[in-house]
Length: 188
Image (cartoon, rainbow, N blue to C red):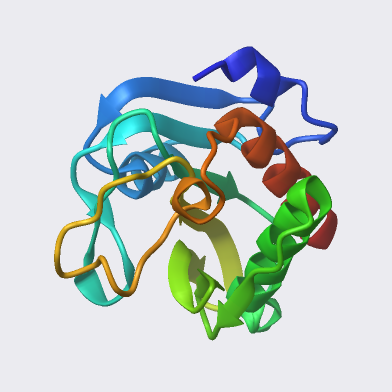
């Protein structure tokens, strides 16, 4: 993963602080710990190999080493809790727009947190927030995107896909990450 390419994103704060490790259990859990301990707004936690990735409803997010996007963004907006309504769908739309602009591929959205390509899941979003009373402390936006994945286990073969499977070529993960964080920053 070329972190310097990601740092060059045209953003004001998302991705300016990047915590990267080749392998970690869960970007979401690392982000939670960092957010509680003063991480900067817009910090991006990213790995090439997530060993205990989290999906919604306690599911596991599986991804091969160095093939996909596994990341979490820490946001610390000055929001009241009500402003979070519909945030995951806005993020899904931002990702959809990013892929459309980069490659002219049309992703679908399965509400509230999945993106589909040819009716198969290609991306999942895990949005979690911490608040006190009515004020948001931080928001964690976890994104798992199947970019260059070629192998899914039997359980997932008919319901999941990747850009590489659908289009038969490798894609640059950094390019996708840059476009996604640029889009997300504009909607926050």
